[in-house]
Length: 435
Image (tube, rainbow, N blue to C red; front, side):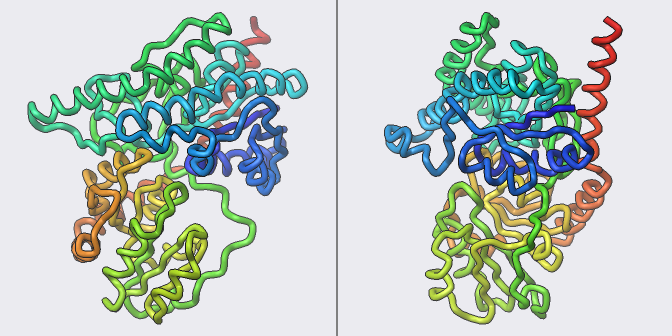
């Protein structure tokens, strides 16, 4: 079977596809990855051949302001609207043209995408190729008016006022996506396809009329109760990234520290250490705990000098898989990959993040009793200290985290994705032969 894989160029969209890609390759399928100059080498490092962008431009969080200088002046709903258009809709025309040209030389039998790769919708509708999508808890959707509206860190409304707030937020999100939807519909019109509504745009690639199956990263116990998934959607557990071939060495203090170990990271997109790493170190150093900070390469040497001491470890990158084995608390802005990895190791969390959909993830963690959510992008030293004390002292939280850890362990995440793709494509071939 020939399989083409693609995602938008962002770590949280790319990483969940990596382990299934490697497994499919190991099972003898001809797997190739459509990627740009930044993410192409990441796919090649997995042993997956890369088909590079031709017409498309790789838009990332790092070059978004450079490519679109006007973005820096936007805030709130206008910034959301611009990002939805620039990051997701504008590349669709060029990406679909690339993929259509690719199929002329590599007639792939299936395409596996992350749900934000909107060119996949045209692949399913125009090329008639089976498309498989990856979604996740807190995936943005405003299709159902009764669901919790994304991007506002909202929880299920319990009062009439809360329901009004949810409806207003939904209207704002739909309005903010109008420009991106219009641009997407223009591409559909060029291809002779009918338009989609503004409320259908966000999750159009993951619906039954586009994706044969959508593999939802997470489990129901991490979502708000009452969520009804479309019939082609299925939970697949953590679906963690493919492990690195060479592990990053861990500071020996992490495994041998006699007290608590607290890990903090700012994530991969907004990596300013002053937002979360610095106040966490200032709040918790000297408490008897070992504070371990992963900076993503942002000002590491400076922070090492600034916080030199036996109870602070500052690294560019870290093998979280090994570090979480002895971690008592994870302080995070709410990136999905780190959250799921922490839960698979039974680590409670202190969360502080509201942007890029992280506030929606953090709201769910707090609602389910798996984290203390500070509900801010820039927590104070005092708030972190009090939040950490609360999380570390909460026996009920540790019990709930342990239960989610047990549930996640029951999912063969990679197997569910790989076997799901193989079964659907085989069934489609049999149907075609019978026809």
